[in-house]
Image 1 (tube, rainbow, N blue to C red):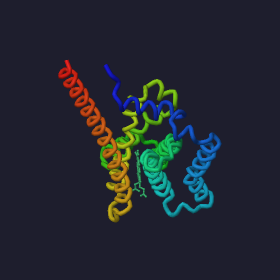
Image 2: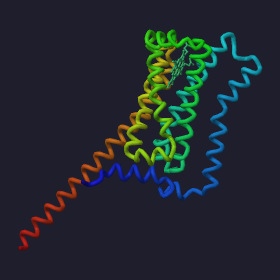
Image 3: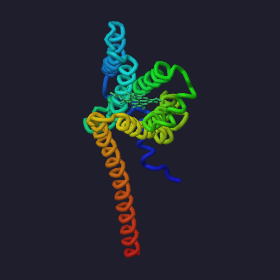
Image 4: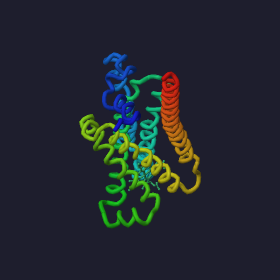
Length: 246
Ligand code: HEM
């Protein structure tokens, strides 16, 4: 059985990133420098929270402040993670792919903080109460599902797991990030009672990113179909002209 074309493309991009033309073209120092700068920038939300806590500036309701801050940053990091592939494809800066795992792990780190704030500072480890809340309040249910969806992605984010699962299966599993992000936006939309502008902005960004993905995927499938058709048309006409010659 022939290997699907998509699989070969994925292998090239995901499993052997170093030999992919655009990435190999960048010097190692450049990539390390960019990664370090992005890593330090990603620490900003945490440093800010720490600073505000240390200076007693978390407002009248510090638990709500921390929950909201960590929730917002989870969504921001999820959207940043999802922007990497479109940006890489549109700009031709293939090294951008090197930042995706880090951004995804920062999203997971923030959702863990968000969840811990909820179970610790909000629910005081009352697990039965928490389960009741997860079932009773739809926005918590959706947030919880999104969180659960992100766990296998974080656990399989290492290069070893990419190899073990195989490029295609790994990629299929990691499509869950879209569902997690959709859940995150719904979670935000459902918890906001009055002004829904902010969750709608996040929702619009996510729609653009998803739309881009759908267009590219269908474009790829379409071009594969056209190539196959033109190949088979060519081989039929070559066969016919050979028959004529005989
Ligand atoms: C991918 C998963 C999640 C994302 C993206 C997310 C995102 C958010 C966002 C953006 C906010 C609002 C921030 C604001 O008001 O500025 C929020 C609030 C909140 N989230 Fe999440 N969240 C997620 C998972 C969870 C989970 C697992 C729980 C608990 C089980 C949870 C509980 C809450 C609570 C209690 C609030 C505050 C509601 C309020 O202030 O009334 N979230 N979250």
